[in-house]
Length: 276
Image (cartoon, rainbow, N blue to C red; front, side):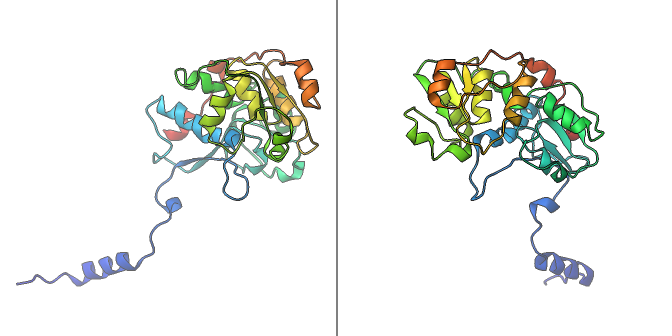
């Protein structure tokens, strides 16, 4: 004989069956890593490194980005994305863009562990925020985080890495180039195979210099102001960015002076406590 289900349990199961499926955001508290993407769902390799670096640091400590945490949090790391931050967010290595009006930075307080460079630090300090003097773009950590994956080798004399806004110009320059819309690993593989990297992409310069490859910023258009490049250069021990205005000038100048960067100092400030 079929057993009758208690009415209360029947009603509860009925409500569950008829309820809309929970969205990912409703499931449990977690830490989101902010990753800027251009329109059209494309992935810009430099911004993708925000997630790549955070995932790798956590994995080396036996954790995952997908873990349930004590509270929701947002982590800002690789990228010129400070204007997207909101009060209470955590910052580890992000930078100010330089072309975004100051009033677009609408936060009152941030949990800052490190920033890309001293220009970003000064911008935030002027707003009354406490900024530790720990500088460095977290993408500089790739050689430390992936010590056996990417090996510098000599496959070509020169490689050009365009900023997203300069991508249509790249085929006209007469140089081998790699699109910033390719997978992050494919772009890094191309960079470590060059003897000299010319780039209008900030992270083209960052990745090259992280692996000890001479690099020179090339400013082909006025789209990207010098601020973020200058911030990065000053955060790695230089007096500022010395850009070329053409490929010919960049080839004549060669690579910029080498960086001064302590990966362990930046790693020591990673906000592991957000996952505790």
